[in-house]
Image (cartoon, rainbow, N blue to C red):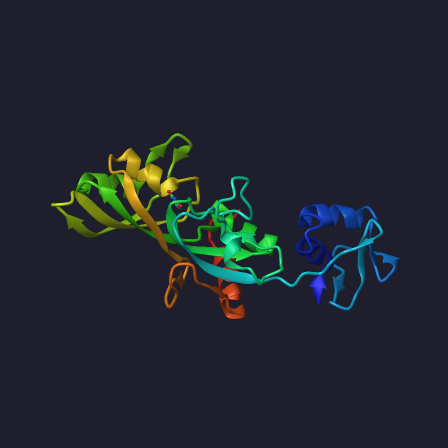
Length: 244
Ligand code: URA
């Protein structure tokens, strides 16, 4: 049994909010009868119509992809470049990425057709931690690490404090491998943070998303999340103390 507005949202007809408005406006029928109560629950056997058109029910699905570099975090590309959904040729559900990784960034990316779940995870106030490993130019000094940890002023505002750990430094190659943990998801955030301290990123990989890792996967591999992992992610994103 699922709430009517959720079922409508999952079918891709409208956002959950819009679905609620449609229900209240009397535009939704269940088994031929107009239903105006938002709490109404339906099963997969119930016939749901929105504005006289029966919706196509789609079961929610959740995947973890080890995105290779050179792939766009989108469902299609007008220039014909490879996109993340190309790694799911047998999945007919309309999945899309939860947030994005840059074309040149590799690593852990979630995909789903569950809009509510995606929004929950992406909302900055829910503070889902992401761990990146960056190879940066130059030998990074304590002062720069302190700045990254405290928060960096970017053109779209201060970044929240980050956790930073130097994994190794190569004097000969003049580069440093740094692990950085952030919970925001601004566009090219890690690259811009390192640019701001004078250490441009040469290579970037997302190694963790909340408690999820790339363990057992090779680049280009994907796996379905277990129901327990989905539940854990939901609980984690919903449980932040500062939630307004
Ligand atoms: N930060 C970036 O700069 N790039 C990514 O792909 C993800 C985070």
